[in-house]
Amino acid sequence: MAPETTTHRLDAVGRVLPGVAGLRSYRPSLFGKDLVAGLVISTLLVPQGMAYAELAGLPVITGLYTTVLGLIGYALFGPSRVLVLGPDSALGPMIAATVLPLALANGDPQTAVAYASVLALMVGAITVLAGLFKLGFVADLLSRPTQVGYMNGLAITILIGQLPKLFGFSVDGDNLLSEITGFIRAVAEGETVAPALAIGTGCLVLILVLQRLWPVFPGVLGAVVLAIAAVAAFDLGDRGVAVVGELPAGFPPFEIPTVPLADLTVLFAGALGIALVSLTDTISTASVFARKTGAEVDGDREMVGVGAASVAAGLFQGFPISTSSSRTAVAFQAGSRTQVTGLVGAAAVTVMLVAAPGLLRDLPQPALAAVVIAASLSLADIASLRRLRRQRRSDFVLALVAFLGVAVLGVLPGIAVAVGLSILNVFRRVWWPHQALLGRSGDLRGFHDSAYRTTTQHLPGLAIYRFDAPLLFANARTFRDQVQRIASLDPRPRWIVVAAEPITDVDTTAADMLEELEEELDDAGTLLVFAELKDAVREKVQHYEIARTLPTERFFPTIHAAVDAYERAQGASWEPGPGPYDLDE
Image (cartoon, rainbow, N blue to C red; front, side):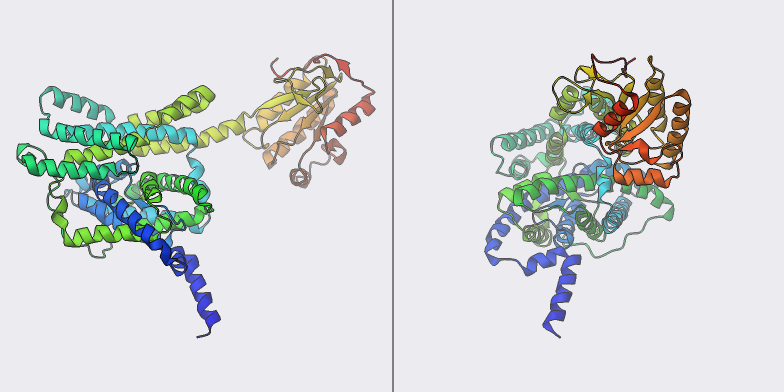
């Protein structure tokens, strides 16, 4: 085979499997750092994988399966050199909300694994297809304010859900309020297991203190090791402290999961929300670390990589995964620079599953609850809520509604509320964009918004109106009503110049409106003209065949050109003062 043909095929494989391309160019000198970083993150992957599996309502062993396959899948298909994927605290409640009602309805709680695996395949397929069809922009459906509100709601939901486990008992609740009341009732009735509370609280404090004072050290590992030692030393298992127990030895076989066809619709709805949150988190984290490494973020390829990792997990009794910013940060600080780090971490977890499955049998459940609660606290972002409240009250309200959507309605309806709010906020800004009347202000060159700078000179009979949005069906009425209101002012303007530079589009609905508006204004003695309309938009307007009412001479390249034409046509001259026109009238 010719060398050129071999190179061409390897390049083709590299485009599909970026990880393979990375291994082809891998420098052996990096292996030492990648090995250390892989072993360091494996100490986090094991306890966090188990804890997040429980958060998702699944057996703890599935968290380890998901961890291994997620790391391998992304190492082969993912474009980033440093991202670490795996079970995620933000996805856990969403998985539980999707899977558990179906699993319990079908009688056997163990079927939750099959449902979760199908869910992973769905999430993976959605994400991969979105990447292949260049739909990376869907990650923008969660605006920053709604994302802040959603994550804070998720944090309080996770925290409340894990408190009973921290106290050594369980609570059945259908929503956040019932979980809160159930927890308070159980504590009041004396159901708290003191050793469980002591070990859980101790682990939580240790994790938080180490994160604050010694962030380089894996505090989760320290808490888990001490918790296991305490259970063994004080026989806490016999004192009411629930432990993980013996894990199944070995690795699960390749298996295509099956569930009743009637349940696929419900799973698909959950998969859409999970895919959106996973993508938003992944692209955000990838952007942060790309800036640190000087790399470029390819959102579409990230979608393929994350989707492939979820598919791999779903074929081995796993569940949907996402990027972990905390684990990625730990790996980066430990020296990780390639996905070999992830492969080392996957190998370390696999060795534990095969050679030492009993290593974690004394791990207490309250310690896992502490791990999850610590993760939930990292999701909370109170500082951003305060900043939104201080900087833009409308964005703060959006965040607050998104928070309440999760806290009151639940995590899946909450993500729907968050996405809906983001979309409605975009439409709101298109429906009611900023509008301005422009004028001269002192010695400043050009024309300025009279709401922000005092107008010191005006041309009698001239109004310069700016509309800061594309002119579409949604806001055509807003534009028309405002122009009509300006035209009705006394004295009636002879010309209304539309400063059209912000108008990036005009659809057919708006074009019909302009034709009717122009005829109405002409009959009343007011001329409507446009200045600074972009060539592409002007071509569209002319294509709409409204040249009879909006001929070429109604369009000017600049506001200055339109004003000069008005001065020549009307014989007007500048006069001192702000003039008679005001949008606030």
